[in-house]
Every structure is written in C-alpha cells, then in structure tokens.
Length: 409
Image 1 (tube, rainbow, N blue to C red):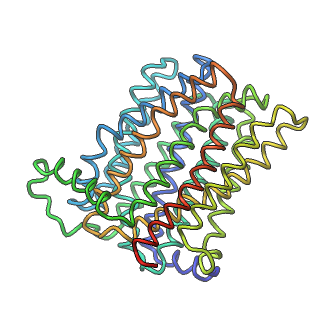
Image 2: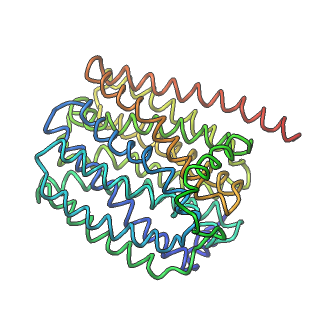
Image 3: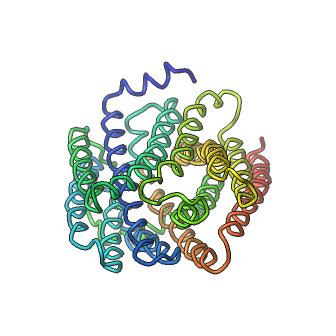
C-alpha cells in the first residue's frame, strides 16, 4: 500500500462523511469518558469506583447490544447513525447538571452508552458498502487511526479542559462535535440492508442468536473474535488503572498533565495504523495480530519495572509509544478479517454479538483490576497483563496453525 492508496480512499466523499462522523463521535466518547473518569477518581480516590463507571458502559452493551445489531441489519444505517448522533448530543447536556453526584454520573453514562450501542453496529458494517474490497484494510486503518487518535486527543484534552474551564467544558465541546457528526451522516446515501424491517421486534432475539451461531459455525471468524476479546479485556483494565497510574505512579497532575501520559500511547497507535498498509504486502493480517499481542505484552511487562527507574515519565512514554504501535496491529487487521468473512446481510448482528461478547468479557476483569490496584500495587497488575498478552500471542500462533490446517493451507 502506498500513500496514493490512502489518499484515493479519501476521494470517496461518502466514506469521508462516515469518517468525519466517526472522528466527531469517537472524540466525544473519549473526551467525555476521561472527564467522567477524572471526576469519579477525584470524588472517591479509588480505582474500583472508576471501574464502576466502566461497568455502566459495559452493562449498556449487554442490555441493548442484541437489539441494536438486529436493528442495524434491518433499517437504513444512515438514519440510525444520524438519529443516534443527535440523541447523544441531547444526553450530553444532561451531564452538566450532575457533575458532583457519582451515582448520577454512572446512570447517565449508562444512557449515553446505550445509545452508542445502536451507533456501533451501524457504523463499521457500513464501510464495505462505501469502499471496494481492496480498500477495506486502508479504510479500516483510517478508522483505527481515528479510534486511537481520538483517544489521544480526547484523553489528553479532557484534563486541561477541566482544569482551566471546569467540568462543563468537555461536555459543551462534545455537544458541538455530535451536532457535526449528525450533519455528516445526514448527507450519506441510503445504507439499507436487503433485510426488511417487517416483524422486527419478533425477530430480535432469534436473529441475535443467529449472529452468535454464525460466529460459532464460521471458523474464519474465530481468530479475530478471540483476538478482539483478549485485547478488549486488557484495554479495559488499562483504562481503569489510568488515573491511578498518572496520579500516583508517575506523579503527574491528573488534570493538567494527562497529555504527557496519553500522547505517547496515541502517537504510537497512529504510527502503527499508518504502517499497516506498508506491511500488508509482506505480512498477513493474522500474523499482524500475533505480532501485536507479543509486542504490546512485552511493553506492559516492562512497565512493571518502572519503580526501579529514575526517569519514570520518560521510561513510561517510550513504553507507551511502543505499546501503541503494537495495539494498532491488533484491532485494524482483526476488524478487516471480520468484515471480509461476514456476509453483508449478517454484518450488523455479527458486530452486535461481537460488542456484547467484548463488553461481557471485559467488565469483570476491569473491576478486578481496580480492586487489585487498590489492594496491592499497579506494578503487579501491569506485569500480569503483560504476561497474559504474551501467552495470548503464543496461543493465537497455535490457533492460526489450526485454522490453516482446517483450510488445507
């Protein structure tokens, strides 16, 4: 893949509109997420309470994920995306009235995340409808770049916005961004599946179960499914530990110094996403994922030694940059495999089942990570996560060999 390939995808204005919506939506998600995590940590001084906020996000997926995915397969995705963008903009304004009530924040977070469950299964499955199959990896690289770039900007800007303009500032910014996202999707072409919306409510659970059965019966989806679940578990744990890492281990002010903690990770992800296209001619997508697990696991394991280093911030920034590069090697290739193997009429419910499985798998480990960090030490938790990723990379290597054997490769 060359620079020309990346630029040619952007010349597809319908893809660019979808991408703009993703940029604004994802930036809002991470901006608000970190602002709420900061507030929760400041109100309670506990990593376990931070995990409760993440549970609110995850619970929404478990409750509405099945319904949302089938919805995405039966109705025009253009209108799903547009309505959700504008609805989330309205919910963002409600946050402004409950900034000092921890449990109110958790409840409103659940509502916001519930709406997001309808957005996600409609967004990613729309990419193959707007670009050619040969452009899928590049298009998903843009989306991976956006996801992690938005994490960089959102997490980095949330602290300074709160520090200089108060807790309301990130939410006002998010409100404007979501309005832009809604206007972008409003001008998309029709993105309706061949499935009819007739009898929709009667078929929600049967079709969601069909999505799960599709996963079980389609061997080629097993590898990306396992990879995404394992990666999501670790990322959820990292998010829970982030405020304590910045405040206690690095000794950086959580509000004004969050950029130093998030920037190297996000920059690494951006670099990783950009080089994926260059690697695609020589390295298969499955092997990219395995390399991602091994590299990110090594970086997290080394992070556990930070207490023995004098220049902790510099040491952390180098490891975070490396972890970010390898993190990009997991998500974009995994989604590309998922989208290539899932047929168009099932993509929405496949992604709905995926998001439910991801959140269900990550919720309990994230809470346990918060409890362990409060009870023991951050270093022990990071060492455990690093070793777990390395082991996962080895297991996935064996898994890939099994898949090739079954396919007769």
